[in-house]
Amino acid sequence: MTQILFKDINKEGLHTMKVYEELGGYQSLKKAFAQKPDEIVAAVKASGLRGRGGAGFPTGLKWSFLAKDVFPRYLCCNADESEPGTCKDRELLLKNPHLLIEGMILCSYACQIETGYIYMRGEFHDLSFIMDKALEEARAKGYLGKNIMGTGFNLDIHTHLGAGAYICGEESALLNSLEGGRGEPRMKPPFPAVEGLYSKPTVINNVETLCVVPYIVNEGAEKYASLGTEKSKGTKLVSVSGHVKKPGNYEIEMGTPTSELIYNLAGGIRNDNKLKAFIPGGSSVPMLPADKVDTPYDYESLAAAGTMLGSGALIVIDDSVNIVETTLRLISFYMHESCGKCTPCREGTRWLYQIVERIMQNKGQLDYIEKLEDICGNMSFKTFCPLADACVAPVVSSIKHFRSDYEEYFKNVGVSS
Amino acid sequence: MSEYKFSEDQEKEIASILAKYPFKTSALLPLLTLVQRADQVVSPEAMVAIGKRLDVSPAYVQSVLSFYTMYHTEKVGKYMILFCINISCQLNGSDKLLEHTAKKLNIKVGETTFDEKFTLHREECLAACTEAPMMRVNDTYYGDLTEQRIDQIIDSLD
Ligand SMILES: Cc1cc2nc3c(=O)[nH]c(=O)nc-3n(C[C@H](O)[C@H](O)[C@H](O)COP(=O)(O)O)c2cc1C
Ligand code: SF4
Ligand code: FES
Image (tube, rainbow over all chains, first blue to last red):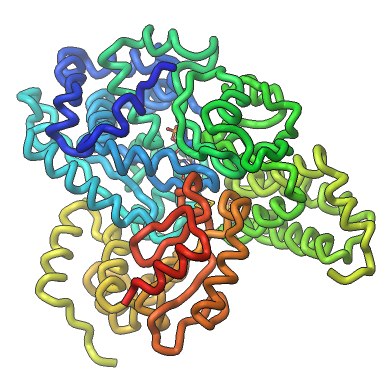
């Protein structure tokens, strides 16, 4: 299978400038600097690349939305990686920091940006040293700084650490956090491309998204676009975790059957149990039952199956589990991470938690499922940011596909657990 | 309240942190982190000192600090054990292992040992789900945990 991001990922010393350059690193800069910035934006558009952070927004289009002639502009790389199940960006940051820097230089040149930040979750403190070291090497080489490679283009990039808050992965909350505030989401519009960091036009992209750009510049948009499906182009890193024999991050061509990921790349279900359910795109997307396992792993096919590709985290659940337990854990996560700004999210997550907890304590009543659905209906699309919808996803999908798991608990009502 | 003094090394780091940003409030989280790494907690004195340095009120510093889970205002152990209990770790048995860890340390989850050596907390996903079950002790990630491995790790810390 074509490997773009993971081609050399396990090469000894890849995180150093020396090895990275020996393997062809930073070659794209010369190519890019020979073109006009707009041509790079056009190439990224033509490649069909879509954001890998969760929303899947077309990257070139996002770059072209920057407010015209307003400067300075900023680039923020979203390295907050905190969607449960997702750990692909961490592997890129740990093993291939220069690929991200190269991608950020290309994006900054294309968008005429002179300052970039890499916003990393606070728990990545150790990774920030690796990244700082790589940035230092890039400065020493003249790939960052003033008048880069004689082009007159200036750029510096800095790391910035968060301090533990899932919501800071949401792009406008990230900006507030980077400005030194509480990580609460902002009202949109204005979108960051118009008013972002310090109220200036800002590009925010996920680590993986930016890491794809050197390939597009080196090999051409057509070559990238020739990979994958008609609408989901290129390759995708998928973090496969849960009940599989070989959990890991795997790079697949878009459109690869999910079953290939689970049974081939990740070695199948552990203890040779049977697959019960899988969550294809991180904890914020609806789960699917085992009979959907052949769904091609791409944006459109997963949407047609009633879920989303999300951040590319495939969580595999075998038949030893009662889905209600898993669901409660996810609700608990969203309850904990709700920033508290909107009532349906702040209160709704708590109510969902209390009701499901009561069900699990065999204290449920039959109308509890309807109550859950009712609360979910009053949370979806009614909040400032999609965190509330993310909490609704596992609840609604678990009821839809695994109602009998809830009913197990009703059998024992009155019997204390 | 006595005045908080930054050390010489800290002053150097503060200067390089401030140089990263066009507006100094952006240095708030980095300065809180800097202080906590030295003192293990962020004291009221430190909040005042950071506020002064960045031209914001101590109340603002506190309101920001309280939003983030990684800052502590009360004493924690020398080793902060954050045990992931989110989905991929749960599926791989984290709940039992957390219980085991608490028993080994003879504390409840959320508490600090008597000798102030260990604090144990439940943690949400740490972005290492393919190595589940996993925990973070101070800055180090430990994956593929088993009861034996946890015992070894804890016994090896001094
Ligand atoms: C609650 C929430 C959490 C998010 N967490 C992350 C994250 O950890 N990393 C990330 O790249 N995007 C995250 N996103 C998506 C970002 O808001 C944004 O869409 C993304 O960073 C844009 O980059 P992309 O277009 O390259 O995907 C999150 C969104 C929401 C609503
Ligand atoms: S939906 Fe939840 S997390 Fe998002 S802004 Fe509202 S309260 Fe905060
Ligand atoms: S769920 Fe434990 S590290 Fe992600």
